[in-house]
Image 1 (cartoon, rainbow, N blue to C red):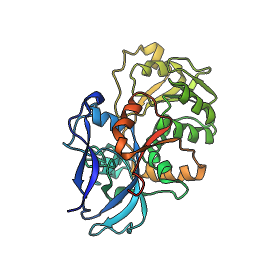
Image 2: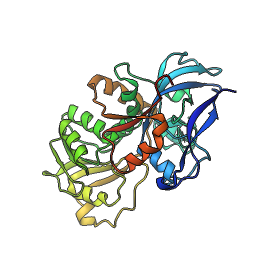
Image 3: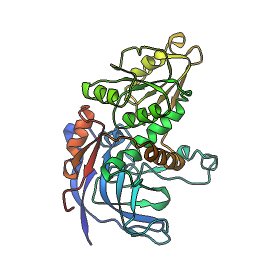
Image 4: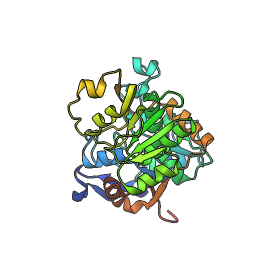
Length: 339
C-alpha cells in the first residue's frame, strides 16, 4: 500500500513537549460520497493549536490536524458526483451533520449535536493527502492562489459568521480585538461594507497590517477605542478581554466571541458591562451556506489575504510561531517543491 508523510498529534500537551510528530501513514482511500484530495496548501489555524495542546478535548488518537485544506481531487468514491479528478477544492472545519435534527432542518446545522469536524474528529490536511465528504467540500474561487485560498476556509468563514453575529448596523463602528488570520479578513469585509473599524491588538506588525487594511484607529488590546462601538468581535482567545470589549460598546451594542476556546472570563459588573442592552454572544462553527456565501463575497471584494508560507515539514515550528504571536496574517503549510 502506498504511503504518505503526515503530522499526527501523539499526546496533546504544551508545544515544548512536542505533541505533534511527523510520521508515515497509508494514503487514505475515499469511501462512498467522499473525495481524496492531494493537498497543495493547508492553513495553520488557532483551532489546530487548541487541538494539539489539549485545550480542546481529544476526539481521537493519532489525529492528523488541519482544516483549511486546498488541493486537487485525486480520486472519488462510489456515488460521489460533484467533483472529478483534477478539480481544485477546499476542505473546511465542518465535516458532517445529521441532516435531520431540528437544527439542521432550520438552517442551523452548525448547532447539530452529531456534527463532526475535519482535523478533530477525522484526519485533516497536515499531510500529503486527505479524504473529505464531497457534500461538505467547496469549490475554491479561481482568483485566489492555493496559499491565499487556504485561510479563507476557516479564518475567513468564521470571521464572516462572527461579523453577522455581532449585528453591526450599516455604517456602524466595529471593534476588533486581536488581529490574526481571521480578523484581517473580517476587517476588510467590514470596511468594504462601509463600517468604521477600530482594531485593538498586541504586536506592532499586526497593528501596522490593520492600518494598511483601512482601520480607522489602532491600539492595544486594553486601550479604549476613540469612540463608543456599535459592535465588537473578540478574536483573541483571552477571556479577560470580554469585560474590556463590553465596556467599549455603546448602548445596544453586541460583542461576538469568535473562538472555539476562551480562557476564563472575569466576573462581569452588570451596570458597567451589560446594562443599556449590551449583548454578549458566542459563535459556534458555521453552516455550509456561510461558507458558500463568504467565498463568493471574498472573490467579489478581492480580499487581500496576508500569508506566511511554511514548508509542510516545519508544521511544528508554525504552531510555535502562532502561539507566540509571530505570524503576520495566516501561516500556510505548503509541500516541498515536487511534492
